[in-house]
Image (cartoon, rainbow over all chains, first blue to last red; front, side, top):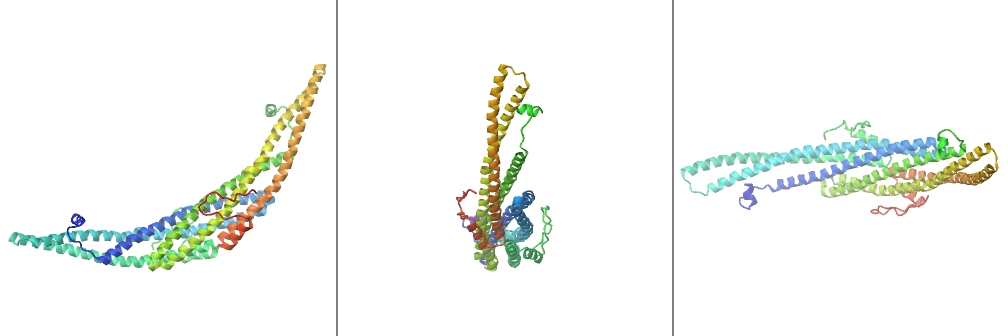
Length: 233
Length: 233
């Protein structure tokens, strides 16, 4: 069936609306994977910035103690770097939470629907193959042997038609729920991302911590790499 | 002379106050080199953050256009990332200026004084050698031949004593000017560093740009890697 379709022979059952929705899902997954990759890159570079700020803060503090002539200048720089370092850790927790939630959406939830779509697509090919068989037989001479063959083909056609329609319905329902889930998760995560980033870069420590509380994010204990608060979206 | 000093024989001329100042200079150079290394590391990591923010801003903007259901959420995130990117470029200019000025102080100004110190140290060794020669001769029997030798030794001693004292005076003056220059440069640079970092992390674009103006820093044109505003401190 795949071959005859590829060579332009044999007809293909197409649900245009469903195909369009599937196309959009694949495109969305691809785009969100890109966001995920960038957000991950951001945490990687940003955590190196925070690390450098911590060392710089300690170095300035040491120089402040040991340079009476520039005590004040080194002092306020030490203080600023240390505060930034603390807020930076909080922002990293927020971005990690964003990454983990979007990752679940893209690589678990979307992936599950795409698996059903693959099953639907092979069911469609099988169904079209049995349908074509039956159509060809009905054009042949009808002797007794042929009538038996047609009978069997009719049964096969019916079984695969039902399987195909069942999977088409499944895909349709999954796509609907996925769309709802996607909007819910992304609405929440994009809001969190924005609020955390804005609070951090406005130097608003209180608002930053409040944002994390609002999203039930526990602060990562410094030194542990694996976040313990992985939450399903 | 170096050998006899190492084996505990021969006496050594020591200017305790100057030695202490030299020791402090070497220590300061070492510490500032460390600050320089960290500030350089900070620009490296931070410019990667800014680069990622730029791409993330573009990606969010694209998603905002193509996702009617999440247009607003992607939209405000795109805006925030783009603003941060712009301010990030400004902060990078400030940190680059800091790095360039401290680099001149550490690797040109301090290095110049340390060169004079090395000349002073070898002049001290020569002077002590001629001094020891003369002292040993004055203990020997004084016949005519010895008197001629002592006369020559006396002259050598005098020449190297003057050279040593001249260089000691040079070092002393250079150390004094260096200390003044160091405090002036570092006071200015630490203030710039603090004000630029504070303004950036308080989301205060206006104050950030004002800080750069105050320190006569021209904004780096994006895309050119080499800053063109290298300024002597």
